[in-house]
Length: 59
Image (cartoon, rainbow, N blue to C red; front, side, top):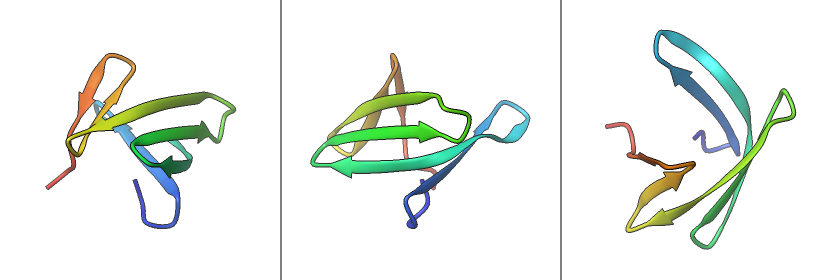
């Protein structure tokens, strides 16, 4: 997630596999991919839970 409200997601060896915008309200996040795909997730103790995955901040 980028500070300008956009995201750039790498999947496996594919850099920038998904790109789009996001909005965070409280502990909820909504995504709108540039291809039209939508998704959402929830932050629990600072960790993103999304579509059965647990995503940690890149260090």
